Length: 450
Ligand code: FAD
Ligand code: UQ1
Image (cartoon, rainbow, N blue to C red):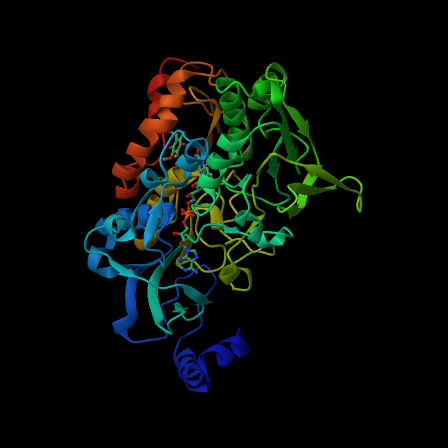
């Protein structure tokens, strides 16, 4: 860390930081660090990195702990997106404009928005640096930087998106291209991919396949469509109960699923996709497409990869039950950028926010965190324009269902929850700090059951 800091900040800042460290007594690994690399002008009691789902939600929750004046959020984007609705935008069932609001409008009132990008971490000195050269110190740090989309790791992308017949629901820049490709479809292969990396909302790559099939049926094109799901994984879904239900959908609707197939190249000018067989290294297959939906490889944000706050795989290294950093006790992580061993979703972020709120409250009172995250996550598997299988599960990949009926059945009610209730709940409750997941509903609905 020392040479890195010297190289990036220059010798004067480095000398200043080193002198400060000399004046800071050594602390044990589980004690709070109190040194700061700058004076109070650029100091906040609570600094939140990332103004996405996790960052805004946690900032809202922290207001009554430390006061709005003592919190800042570092976030470069002008727009905040409710990404889960992009599945429906790609299928033409919702408008892209409904998914975004100005970041300024979601920053909780009184909290400072630092419109900047964090580029360096120095947790030993309790400070970070931004790309405009600001050094910001903190007492407590919440890291909520999300997951990075690595389209460029596929040969021919992202420039391939300049061509028609290809789209991707994972970015606001390409999600409307999915809908265009669906409408333009005439006959041939409609291919949907799943990359060879961890991703957010692992159900989304197949949701758009089911919606496309429904669209083709509704528009009389189904007989001319050969629908293919080429996935790097070896199974359709991680939880057996929902995997079984999805296999039935796949069978009934005559969809082709090929496992261990990883998209490595797109020749968009020729409408060809190249896949490697993960079971047979070096073996590739070229498939022509009439429509291609790409789920890009993803990874931890670059700024985290080489920082001191991550594990060997690059994810923020937090305790899986309390969300407190394993090495720096005044640092916390939430959401897609963490190494929490559960599926990366906004539903998981909601549940994590309630736990992290409690963890931080207790740490602030010098008490040990007690509330434990069970890995709750949820994936509304949209199987048609009016049907959803609502998967909810925990760290052990065991179903943890909210409602008192079998959620592995395709239901209209769960579609309405996904399409209309969830966006309302997100903007009006979750981002304001009032939604910590449906555990209380689950308890209510299951009262009297063992
Ligand atoms: P984000 O909400 O992605 O926020 C990260 C923030 O960090 C961003 O605002 C970004 O600008 C900012 N940032 C990045 N780098 C820096 C930097 N260097 N400095 C400062 N800020 C930075 N979840 C569900 O629960 N249900 C669903 O049905 C669902 N469907 C989905 C469908 C699609 C197509 C997609 C794309 C996602 C879906 N999700 C779903 C997943 C959900 O959107 C994410 O899991 C959730 O947004 C994660 O929250 P986060 O705070 O970790 O990351
Ligand atoms: C949820 O809590 C949540 O976070 C806001 C989502 O993200 C969009 C979801 O998709 C789902 C399904 C939940 C879980 C909520 C209920 C009421 C089961």
